[in-house]
Length: 114
Image (cartoon, rainbow, N blue to C red; front, top):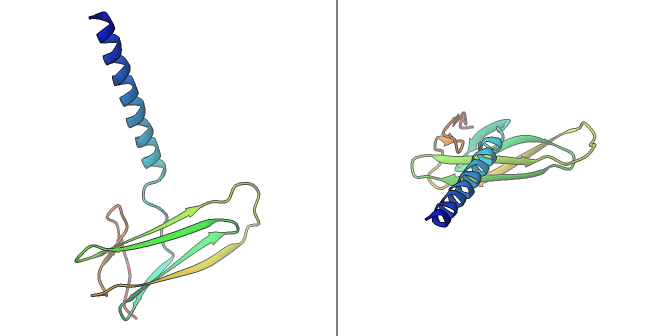
């Protein structure tokens, strides 16, 4: 009985550490960065963003029926980097666009039609 209790307590502690680690990761990465600009050109969404020298940028657009989810992730370069702001733009064709655009956390992104 005592040995079984040790295994149960050990398993509970492992699960608690894993859940806590996942929570810390998600709180540090809440869904990415904000886009600098957004607009529709016909059936394509154009997303503008800024980043620094050496940064790795990834964008994602996923149609969800009546809206589109857009996400920007910037992995900052380590070490000393020049303080230069670079501008980037991503264009995605979306069938059925223009549609409302949201971030993964549900916040709305203002994206007018041009």
